[in-house]
Length: 90
Length: 370
Image (cartoon, rainbow over all chains, first blue to last red; front, side, top):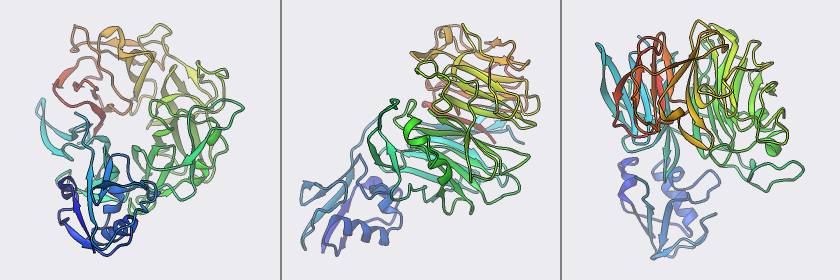
């Protein structure tokens, strides 16, 4: 089970969002499972093609996601995933 | 009554003002911190709609049924699998690279006609018009417009990278008759509820192009129709102001060649008198600041034959305000405008005199009375 943590900025839109474990072999699988638990969450992370949004960042085991287009990066049973965003603007 | 509530879509959220006596009071801030590209009230049922432009999380659509107290997020429209856009600016005779279409911006919300209470429209970048027939529970791309043969070759971005549908005019006499304006493509019309579309740009010119009279590729900034006389249409265009007396079949240029009524973004038309319209002039496309560095509203009452500059109440000092295409509205004799400099002004006398609502707001993207 991969362990997923989230930026607190997402809690504003998904008040029940908490660190959790998902049974997934890839980041794409994990996002699909997270969207099942928190309906609508995937649309905050990826566009309608499934590509990671430009200013969203996902780290897998402390390494930035490689496949931003299809989220094919594999997850191991002890992987840690961190979802956050690049803050910008004024 | 309509005109006593003012919705300001700003870079920092939706600001809802209520009229109190002879002044305005900030009643509520909704979506605080989130850029609100557009917000308006569906005149049929009073629902408040907001198009949100989250920097990180994408474009979201939100609705309130209690005047902004609580909001529900609706699924934003999705570009269907296989839809493509052209990248870059069109060059005649060359094919631009194609990319998958994804939703980039929610330009405008527009409710359908009175006789179709479940229908709402969204105009978006990159050039898709979406329609819902269940009040926003689901949206579908209007394929006939998306598949118009001109789109991949002749539509371009204007300001933003990709074409945007920013104006949607539903004919109050016939809800199946709809006009949209696309920057940069021009005005398109359907008379059969969206099944077929045709460009309606005869008379407008795109002066930077080698083919200024092109049927498609016109740079309309904002399109409005007089509710009481919908065949009189007005457009603020990149290259001036045009009117139509025949439902967009022909366009007649009515701007002042040397300004001030020439370049700008918004245009508003009187609800009953189709000869009366207002614009907020800017210097020009290469210097996007208030005309002559003085915030000015120009009004015509003779269908564009003459324009009067209205400045009573605006500062008599250099101002650099730009008023975006959705940031001017009217309700009866009342007008309001908001600028990217965070100034909001209102008038109760058709623009003869203006008072400041605030000088300290975030950049204003849309101003709509409710």
